[in-house]
Image (cartoon, rainbow, N blue to C red; front, side, top):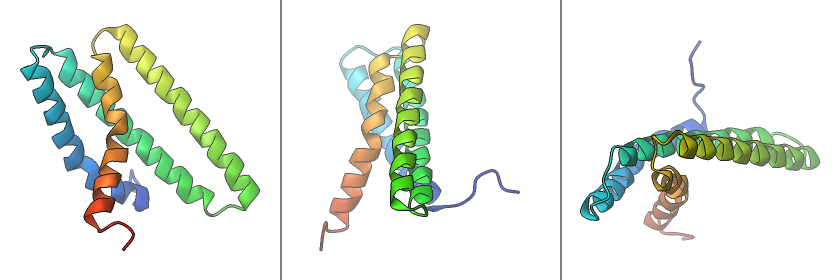
Length: 129
């Protein structure tokens, strides 16, 4: 039995890995050039990137399940999924901020990576053509 079932969400996330690494390096360079580099910066970026990837994967799995359901059930399922993922996000961010090990800004920045990556990929493919 495989640990991860290969699906669209998993395949898409695997294609994001290099983007996450590149964005993390750019953010670290920015902190380094601003003189604000500390151990909490890479720890925050790694933690934020891992959580962002998990969050994206959970969203993808939820969407795959929702499209197999009837409309009212799918709508309710997706609302529950969003609520649970946002609660998990709040818990992770709160715990990360309270721990003192992570730069809170660096925990938050990777949460927007999937949106940027999807937008870049969309533009690269030529948009609505």
